[in-house]
Image 1 (cartoon, rainbow, N blue to C red):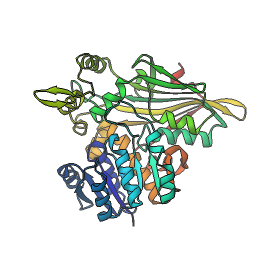
Image 2 (cartoon, rainbow, N blue to C red):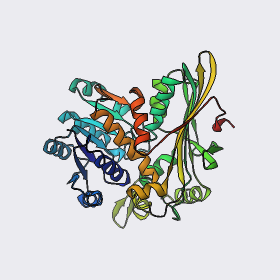
Image 3 (cartoon, one colour):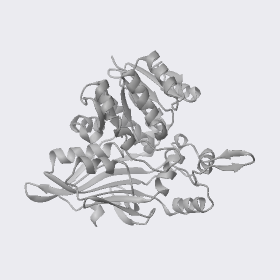
Image 4 (cartoon, helix red, strand yellow):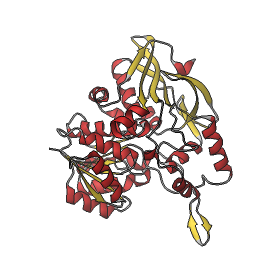
Length: 399
């Protein structure tokens, strides 16, 4: 008997709710909560079967979240709200001694910066409370960390070079749209890049470094070096890494539109005065862009996300590539979502399953690579994100 509280009713929240509802032997009672209860009600109605209870909650208000937790009494809170709200929700879980899981690390509203320091600061308090927080359990971060842990456990004595590669080769037919929350997405890709090499972080200009990378079943796509949060935890937890990088694909049309928006100030997070009201340009832009959860219908093509690793096994050089390809159209047929939401939501459900069934346990604040990867990898194949691997072959990122 496990009770789970899901906070966040966007595209990812809908996938998490759908997947949890499909596993009643683990998730016996489910509540979906958001600032707008009507969104939760719509998701619950679509899933059907009276599997989902719904509630209204302001995830920025600790007291409201505490009251909701005390009323529902969950065993685990799954946070798929905005990264701005991570600390609020972690605090509410701490006060009520409820386990916590999220898919992205904390980011302050007024600074386009994300790092784990704010959440890692909860470690001792969570240990003292005897509860567990699992950080970054989406795909990247999330599955990318589990992939790396799986490689370290089964294929390497030492990992030296890690490249996380993320390609969305899908076409949604929109002139310009982001595949997850526009505000978070644009903040992420317009900040400076960063990668780890020889014990230090090297900073780059946004989109400065790029190269063509071949993705399975997709072909070559121009891929841009960015900073992504899992690099921070992976380089800490695997100190033999000499270099760690993250790459993501963007099409020329997307980048051209984004450049224009930047040049005219629409991606700014600094408030401006408009007709006597204070508005944030990026938040206004978010309001006029398509809602990511509406992109699924007619979305064609695949995503491909994986880890390419070089290192040493038994004194010999070894390469390893592990990845998943996810089809937008198949995802929409299954649950009405698009693949980017699906690849984040399914791992969050599996991570919750790991905690609730005791496969992942302990107390404190941990990143996904600190747990046993094997049961998680097994469930990826079972619940819609099957993975492939190549051992001792040339890595696409190196070509």
